[in-house]
Length: 363
Image 1 (cartoon, rainbow, N blue to C red):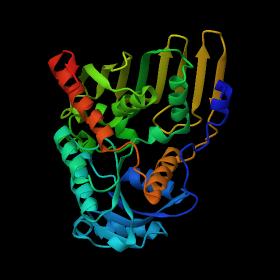
Image 2: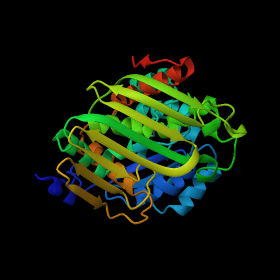
Image 3: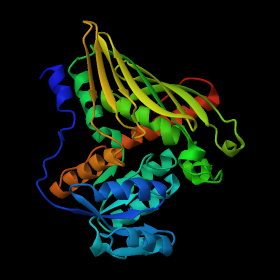
């Protein structure tokens, strides 16, 4: 297959094998991301539907039920843990604050349900390890939506097949105005260390270039360095309003990543090799159109716009349908818990490196 062929079929679902079927989802956690992104994406998906809404407040769950025609049960967190409405769903999507992922994944596993858990997998490495152990008998997928993005998958194939030569460096960035984009409340959970974990920015945003680099390179970090700081009063409890970190991968490639919760909304990923480079921009924030460019030493340049035009949750449609394809066919989904634990170890190392001011090995 030529480079042009790779890019021409960029919207093709190279993973889809399911011919028909519907995976019924219980959605645990009904914050803005779930209501504005996830549930609409499920509604437009090919193989999924939301049938159970789970919230800490019954009133919120009932609101979502009223808004979503496929929802047949609105229950509280406690009722979910106790096993309410288990006949109404086949799998669980967990989208609570990071530090609350563990109990609901444990409950889903107790009920024998497959799990799609938002990233990062938990607030700390220790809790993430508990989560993976709890879900050992059920399918567990962690919601790295970039891994089902068609252009990211093409980047991985192009790197694998030598389109840029040997990878040398990766540059990645993700930034937004948290207090405008998510919530104007400075007391929101992403700024609470008890709920978010090690920090507010690398945990929430930096994980995108980190994990997407891993996926595209098919490599894992072995050591990290980092710097971070917070300026605004709203970020006083977390160390990383702004952050930069570098990674050395086990294939010898270096990555340099930046992330900010108080910056212009933007994101990109660049892979530089000995014979060319791949650039995906914008990336990570669901902005459209998203364009993939390949530039080579022979002066060829190939560019493709993915065709999206302000389609809310488009990347998540791919993610949910991929999850359904795997669960309904009885095939283990990826990225799984063990994959996500590598990120959790790397995140812990990044915050340790920033605190210590020295390179830290990813254990």
